[in-house]
Amino acid sequence: METINITIKIHKEDVVNFENWLHQQLEVISFNHIQDTSQMYKEDATFKKLVKAVKEAQKVKDEYAIKNNYKYLNK
Image (cartoon, rainbow, N blue to C red; front, side):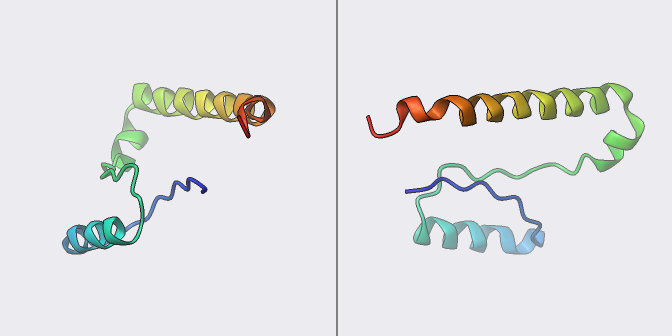
């Protein structure tokens, strides 16, 4: 089984039905509503630095997992 993470945009009024449908069709691990932070990103230098730090940390984590996950497969 594979784990997939996607981000989509959907009309607010459709969220509940979509979430219910997903839960009926799949094993949902998490379902999160993401705040619109586009204006904050444009105007807040501290927030922009935080976003950059999170992206860099995610990149380092992903690279580590790619290099080392083979040790834990098929155990």
